[in-house]
Length: 217
Image (cartoon, rainbow, N blue to C red; front, side, top):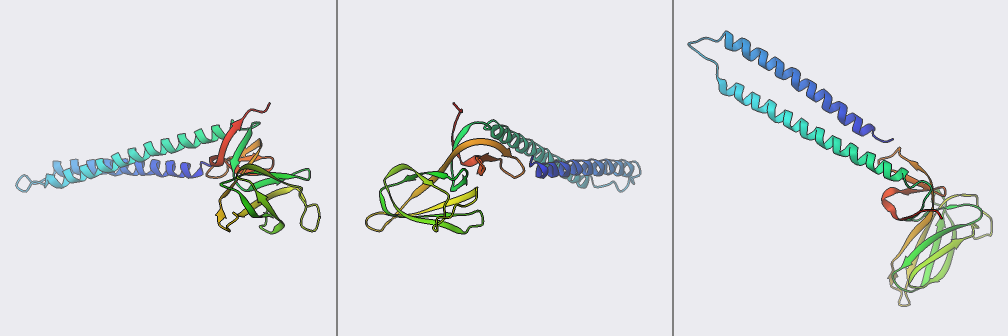
């Protein structure tokens, strides 16, 4: 679980509070000693002591504010992790271009803002190398692109993560916006990063990209 940064903040705040407490105790001890031994004919300037006490109080209040923010951050992190774990075993739809090739097939859902008769589709492997390209025509609205896992030479590629990019143009040659989504069953959750990552049929999906969740029938 990725809370090491929060642990560091908590440790820093604890050390700061300890340092402030020790310095304040020392300050009070010195103040008491000086007051006991001050020259009645030349009394100490109490304004300086008052200013220092105000400064100590201000720092203490800031530490308490940081402590409160730390608690909120930890609570939000725990809440996100709990939410992510609850997705295990459920079907999700999420925005993204990555999908897992398994059993000789991979698929992506897409949404085209309008018809795009001139569309070029490129699929890349995990290293970013283009392994397959195809020119297609897309209709406006929702659709699905299914890839058989073969490169342009007809060779069956190994299972793994692949990404899709879609460059679409309408009949006038103007750019058409096409967004892609992936669907699948969540098999696990990776909590090692700053944001929980769902493992969907072998592909990594950030929790923030999830668009819908459904129970498995």
